[in-house]
Length: 500
Image (cartoon, rainbow, N blue to C red):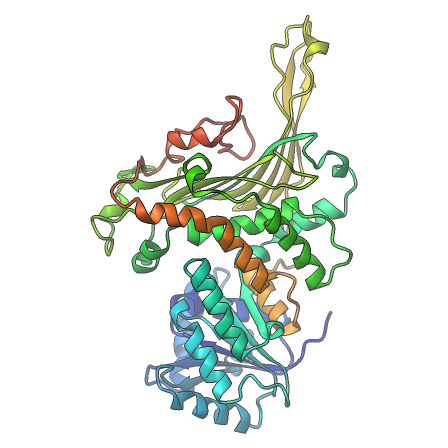
């Protein structure tokens, strides 16, 4: 096992939702598996008038709520001994000087620092700049790493402004733009599946693949994120980040080696090759909608405009679908369909790759009217799997076919401990591995792809189509498909379902 450098892991916004539900539970799990550095201090910055003792009691309560298997008393005691509370208001400049003194003058603290900004994106620039003003970006005594969460900007212009500001205070090598999707097991399996197996490589191109679908559906609504979500929408929240990252993994060429820059170079090449969408073609390439009232199981749920904190005139999309083309030798004229939505029929994320139909002449005098196409399905969540759908002959008289599934499911694997997305990425930060983090040009090119869509939708504020909650979204989004034989793949193992 790799020996990690000792460090101080500082969390800004430590009393917020992300820290409570993801960061602290992930760090506890890593401690339980002996994956954290032998010497680590977890410093939590907050404004509430607490001290180490009261903070540790609060953390214990949060962990009891989140750790489904129960807390191990010895592990909890060991973990809490590494957790510290620093009382400070990040809105006050003097807080950062006091924080520097606290970090540097506490004898037990290592000299390598991680700063995790679990904060609203509007505060990234300010916190990064104040850290730098107090010399907390300098690496004379040890390394310094700054972690920021998506969204990385509001649009292309804002993203460029954020990037420019951050890079005035921290080098690109010190920045970790985290997208937790990239830490998921199956997302990383996509990389291995593609490049460790020669079987499909000859088929992985425009000659054999009809189209690719990438879907992320959520049963949940906006929950307690009304202010953020109404200013962002589905296109910014999911497609610009998560789904475009999945697209790059499916479409990228093999990197020359496994170092972070080689991998990210190939991903950027894909983003650069995506055909720009002119403003006058936005409606042919993108569709948006908003969920209305509906039913989930036996429960009636409100529409988006009835959610607490949402203006009654909002036209923010909760469903977005986009058609993209990658203009390179491998993928020319193969459409990639990306789709995401709230209040969908099921919660799942999946990559669905449909192969072209075989020539029909061979079976023209048989009972086979049309051979169903082959599919390759890559499940991301909640199931993790790789499935191939093939056609085989049915037993009996005559020539009939049926579908059979080759399943390489990993969701039932029980051997060993499986890191969740945040746990894996937090270890990567401490290790200094940028492979699963976004580079500045990656973010820039992703924004260039969606920016024309955002600009057109921004001026269309009078009306937005709706779809009933509990369905797979609006039927009208099928107009994005090029052929009548194409439709959204909603299920994870059966026949293709046309949108409700």
